[in-house]
Image (cartoon, rainbow, N blue to C red; front, side, top):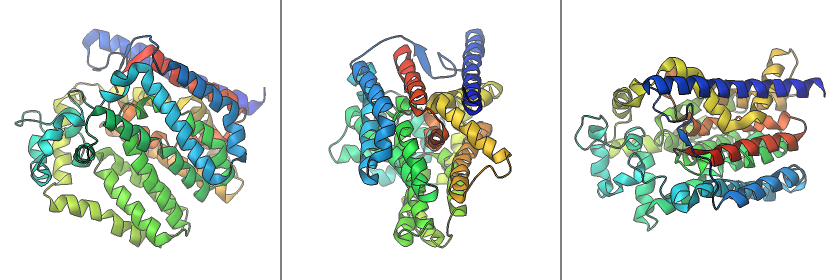
Length: 439
């Protein structure tokens, strides 16, 4: 066994120990006083070993991706590869979601009492709903919004309102939307890696983006959809700064960044990733990015929604609820255990290699490798800022999907890809079959 592989395994073992510690300490705290507000810490889940309709498909998709993924990623033409990644990612995500059956796994996920679909009828007059949105954020306000509606800008809820308006109402269509859009994030990441760094790195990363353990939550929450919007904003920015239709791609990137911050307050931290991308190419498209970005805030503000006031009230609402009870000292490190569930042991091993190259003078052999390192380290920095902020105590297995998807490409640096793919797939299968996740 070579030294690099041994160090990779040490990193993976350390990640596993972090998870085990978070589980044991978390169970002790939760049993003592219930302050964590989760049944199976650090995840919002409960212990419930089970199989379901999606189990055979999930095993088959995982096996096929392990056996054929690396070779197909190496030889397929670029555009067919992107379509294959999207298709295989959808197959993986759908099969995992259907382990819990159609109703529990897909159709009912966004219809529970804290979710977006419960308030669709309150948006029959969209401008009026936006003008009065901030008046329903606090828990003690009249007709207060459910937790997820209050916890996000109205762009998230409006997505499902507009789906309902075009005849795609209900939990089933909402789930289809989130999975279909959410799985395109992998394609966006590959485009960005190829544009900023190297096509060979993107190709080696492709099977790992397909078998991402975070697919467990992409299939059961709206955060996978948010992750895709943010990922495409970054990918289009990458194309713009590298001179590919800088005006059009820059404007569209800015537009999607604007949409992103009206889907989730926390995704303002994608500015860290965007800043890294701007460091890796021309700044000339920035004016087009800015022009695209202002469109969404202008529209929402003109309709009466005040983003800053809503965020101020959300902070108060956060501490009125579970956020005011959950102990910061536990979640500030246990959230990182949640991140391990999203990205898997292979990503931890890959990050070890990235950080190791940063520590070694001359560790990056050429500019494409440096660009790759800057991109993934920016995503890691954004995640760590979110962690330290204290506004992400628990439930980060879904909340951090938009950051986690940018860490997965580090798996391209690993040798013995099939072995690591087995580890990634096994983690997702174990989580989905041993636990009943809250999302």
